[in-house]
Image (cartoon, rainbow, N blue to C red; front, side, top):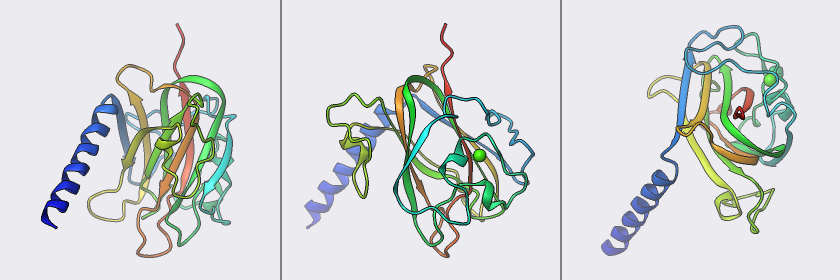
Amino acid sequence: MTSKIAYLTFAIVSVMIMAFAAHAQVKVTVDYNASGTGGFKFKNVPAPAKDDAGSKAKFVLLVGELDPNGADLSALTDGVLPVNEDEPAANLFFNAGGSGGRFRMDLGSVIEIAQINTYSWHPNTRGPQVYLLYASDGADPKFNPEPKGNTDPTRVGWKLLATLDTRPKQGQGGGQYGVSITDSTGALGKYRYLLFDFVATEMEDDWGNTFYSEVDVVAKKQN
Ligand SMILES: [Ca+2]
């Protein structure tokens, strides 16, 4: 029994090291305004853009249900932002009581991506962002464009770009968040598809699914 546990520990540590090596260049910048600002202006993370490369993306919901009190997936790229801290109709969020969900964005063609930025706003536990982000150019012969259920995207042609969690160590984390995912080389890579696994910030009550206001995909400027 002891040796089995020791083996498992070793296996987990190995996976963590490999994951670190594969994604060492990806940088996640998190910015926060406790009371929020009009237009989501942050110190480091750029304010949301209207004409970014994600603005015409097509969405497919793969796992989970959207909350009928919120907007649909297209609200993530419409360039329209909530003007106050608790505005369900201006945000995308998964259904009350659920643990989150998964959706895919199709950018229409392969583009070189410089940044992926996500924005959220809520007065308490639905403010912080917790998600996994995968990307693919669709070229892998094993590529599954719609991995559902418990399918691990990395086994069907997707690359895990980032895992992030902006929850504070203490408190509910209410406020406005901007997250920017970049790479030290200036580009995250060439991708057509993005897959988000949004995770609820808590399951102590039914209100843990984050109010996401916008997702921007910034193409790398070509020389
Ligand atoms: Ca929006």
